[in-house]
Amino acid sequence: MSMLSADVEKMDSLDGWVAIKSDIFEDRESHNFRFLVQWSEAESKFAVICHNRTLQHKRRRMMRMMKVGEDEEDEEDEEEEESSWAAMFSASELKHLHLQLTGSGDALSGFLPDLSSFTQPGVWDTLLRRTWREQELERDVDGVCVHLEKYFSTAVDVCGVKILLETLFPQEKEGEEDKYCENLQEFKRKAMEEQVRRAKDTVDTIIHRHRAAAGLVQLMKIYEEEDEAYDDLVTIATQYYQHQLQPFRDMRELSTLHTMEIQKMLQLQELGPKRVCELEKEAEEWSRGANEAVCSIQDITVCYFTETTTALSGMLKHMDVDRKRFGQASWAVATPRLEKLKFLLAKETLQLMRAREMCVNRRKDHIKEKMSGVCDGASVCDVDMLELQYYEAQLELYDCKLEILKNEELLLLAQIHTLQRQIRELKEEVVYYDACEDPAELQCMQTDASPAHSDGNHTHSHLQQQLLQLEKKRAMTSSRRATLRNRKEKCVEAHELQQRAAQQRITQHHHHHSVHLKREKRKEEEEKRKEFVRMERERTLNRLRSFREVIIT
Image (cartoon, rainbow, N blue to C red):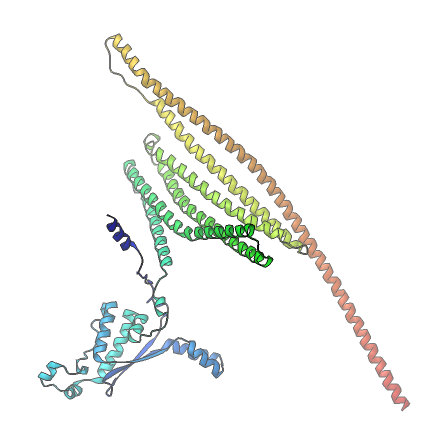
């Protein structure tokens, strides 16, 4: 049994497997390729030349637009993509290449010309006394070359550019195979993502079949299929998001472990100041890594609960629409499922809002760190902006908390409605007795039925107690919601006051700045005027000195 399980694990293992990219031969751009084929008598082979005309035209246009030095041109030519290829193939090699290309496109099978006259004579040709010279005289070289050019042009359309070029002109480079292979982790992530998408599409398809249901019986069968599809979606989404979370959990665990080891070293060992400083920096880096991992975990958790709540809200919305098609008595069959969906939606939404609350708290703490790191010389606008961001984060946090309390109340309401329905059904339950002719028999039957009646009363009292407890919890939740709503209103008022004060400070700052600019402008004009007067005075004095010198001479 153990050997069998080991074999099964080996079959499921991905060791030794390589994931190939699905779009490795996809042509993202259309190119014009020109093939030239000639027969070489000396080599007894076909010379095949391929030109990428589109790339060549692009390069010519670029060369006209840009005047680059010869050295720079040489460097560019080395780095640029190739636009021409050449190779020589014998007739047998061309037939072999044709077999490879037809494996990619069957439509190419009848396009290869007859190359038998270009093949070296074999045993049968020798026996039939056909010489190589006779074959040379019989063959049409130009016609076959033109036919081969058409064949290669057709192969571009049938097989694609990449497959044809890789087949005709293979180029081996280091790491060339990496462009064909997928990263296994990325491949697994994409596969699981596709499974989640298919599961969501399945749920949506079943939901849209509600309208086609002829009656409640058929609709109940659709509900069963829908529940199974939702369970599959939850299972697949859980696996996918657990796979997404695992690296960050490992990082958080590793960072926490290293931080604790460094702290132990600092506490227990006597180290020099330089070593202590290095260890403190290392502990800070590991701590930062743990915080980043926690942030990523919180973001992924929000994504998971967003998926589940979206699916449940769609199911509940369509079920509310279905309820309007049937009467109250007939719809009683589907009431338990409706209550279950409301309960699940409230539960998942509660988890979602708690995850969002952690994200908002994180953002709020980040703003706090920014505010504590603001220097004394920081501008008033920067401080006001940080304060406004903090108020917005606080308001969003209040919204999250109110949503959490709302969903807690919805959970309690769903349980209350279920208990009320059970109590109502228990009250409406009717007990039938057989007909009796003797009053003594009736007395005996009442005595026998009394234990069952007492059990019913006990169940009824137990349900009533549960109902009272849930009502108390609901009242407490409503009180907490009211208190939190009042806090939010006060925060909104403070936020508005802060906004008005910030706007006044900004306006005052702009006014002061404009006054300062005007003052500076006047000062600059005054300086220019003084400079002009000084220059004119100096020029006048220079003219007087020169005039005096002329008179003296």
